[in-house]
Every structure is written in structure tokens, then in C-alpha cells.
Image (tube, rainbow, N blue to C red; front, side):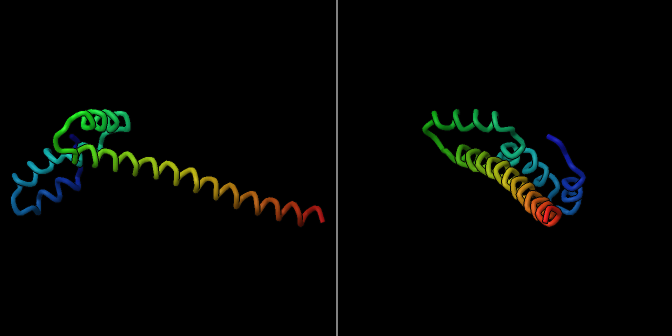
Length: 98
């Protein structure tokens, strides 16, 4: 797991430094956040077959849905930009041809 400068800075001001680093390296949600889509799909598949606690599956599904929404939003924003550019170019060409 990668340690960023922000993590080191937070540890400097933590009440209990050992407790901070333990939570940092054992946090399941951080591990899930750093996984790619295929790894998240494996976690969902593994947790679906088990009959125990399904909290890990729920978090993995949520993170996967968040990533999909970000991809869809990016495509929508690109479509909006191209649409606005088309409107401006169309108005310019209309004014030029009249």
C-alpha cells in the first residue's frame, strides 16, 4: 500500500500514531477503493456465494456503481461541449451565409 505525504502528515498529528497506522493498513474500504473494476467484480462474486456478512459486497457494489456514474457523466459532459460548439458554429455559418 502506498503512503502519501498527506497520510504521513495526518500521522504526525494523530493522538495515537500506532493506532493510526494500524487503521491505515487494515482499512478494508481503502483496499476496495484502490481495486480496479475486475477485482471489485471478483469480490462481489466471492461475497455473493458466501452466506456470512455481506457488507464487503455491498461496499464493492457501491464503489463499482460510483465508477460507472463517473464514466457516464464524463460522456455526457463531452456531448454537451460538442453540442454547444455545434450551436456556435451553426450560428456563425448562418450569419455568414445570409
